[in-house]
Image 1 (cartoon, rainbow, N blue to C red):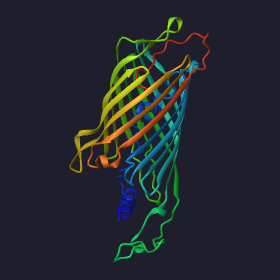
Image 2 (image 1 turned 60 degrees about the horizontal axis):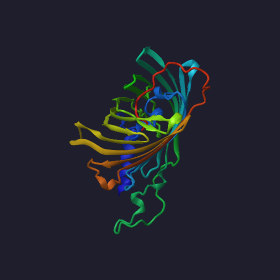
Image 3 (image 1 turned 180 degrees about the vertical axis):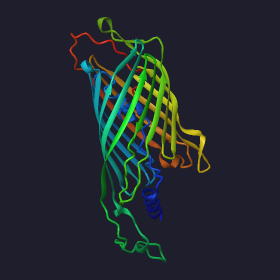
Image 4 (image 1 turned 90 degrees about the vertical axis):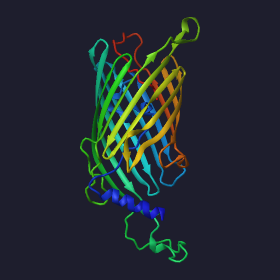
Length: 347
């Protein structure tokens, strides 16, 4: 019965004019910078590559698995960043899957001595597919016992339905030594994502993210010539997203005691109800480790979402992992340009 109801809901989702689809989300959104905002392409001033994985509601069949990989670099002579991002999202027992490949470009524009702006743009190709083989229909059940009596159904549903479509996105990022404010608009063209030939537009996703970092007296690492500071800071941060009928907000703090980063925040929109219920989604806890070398940085993060919505903790919450590696290839003899670094957290 659960599978039949889920199938009906998915069909309605495909057919209705007002689509209630929602893009996958990451709790470690700054560890997935290119997914968050194309303006982050090349933002470190180095080469960077990373992988993100999220398993949401693992204890129930209607779960979500998202994985993405990215690479970006900064072209110093052109004040430009370029990046490539690949994402795969798999939803529920139907195997509804979305795969995207995106290319990004950003430009670093110095507005004043203490303020910079990065506009960013993205062009992507999406593939959406679904597999009906896992569904069980009424004609496969014994009406008296409820047992499955047939492995085949008379329902005429094609399996392996698939569709490709292009997509455009854009964003921007203002930042200073201590603060940042970014915004992004994904799915500007609102492409038709229907797999059954009817019109089902992918809603535009609008998002904003901001924060401020308070620096404390740094610690020290190493001795003598090799001594370097260890960051000590606290950064309150917020992210807000709107897509179709959905709104979501993340608000919390990052505590950096290099090489450890701890984050905690709340996800939900308490001032907005959904079907009569307060929109409380989860409480998130993050722990990250940063390993710094002479010319490279390795970040490893894990976070857990404790579900506080009506779905409850029995859903299994969400587990998320990130691995990001960045390295420099610039000539150390070449004088570096006077460039601000974005102060947002690594996770």
